[in-house]
Image (cartoon, rainbow, N blue to C red; front, top):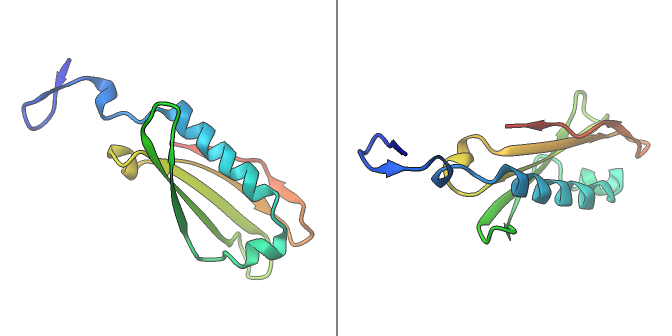
Length: 114
């Protein structure tokens, strides 16, 4: 057990998001978005969308999706998905992404950061 700055005891997992569950939710959303065409992704440029999903642990996770130019306008589009559980993870969400080219091919593989 450790103590928070407020003098209250806390266990490490009280403030820790379950990263495996968050990763599964991000992967699910990325797979859904990968099915969209380049033209469909154009509609979402520079517009973040947020949904709340319940994870396998019963917690609610905020999932944010964004699309933006990955370089010059009219070129590749980077699509990112991030997940947090509303706790401290809002400052460091789990994220995944992919890049889609104008011809509809995928330029890069998904990457994660935490």
